Image 1 (cartoon, rainbow, N blue to C red):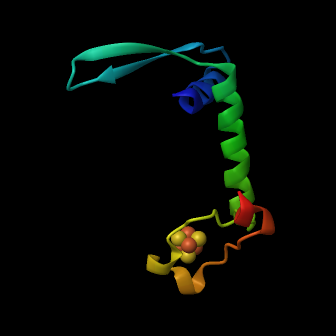
Image 2 (image 1 turned 120 degrees about the vertical axis):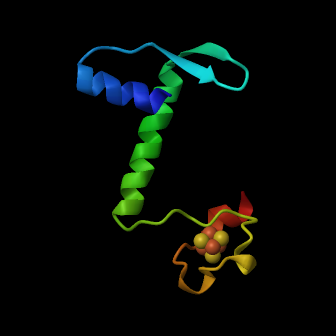
Length: 86
Ligand code: SF4
């Protein structure tokens, strides 16, 4: 919702502080505040996506079930020393 609100702000050149989520099965509409912390999170995710697009893959997290992964042979992620401990 926040990402969409930010895109809307950019295209409409106006601030969006509230969104509406419609739960069809429940027949309910709920208001969602567009929070500053979520805006920061969207920007961090955007930056991560850009880094991946630029060829820098994220570190391999601990406990990932790589042994069953179909792309294990070609996977280029790596496990850093830090990700081994955290
Ligand atoms: S092999 Fe690579 S893509 Fe597959 S689960 Fe492990 S880290 Fe993820």
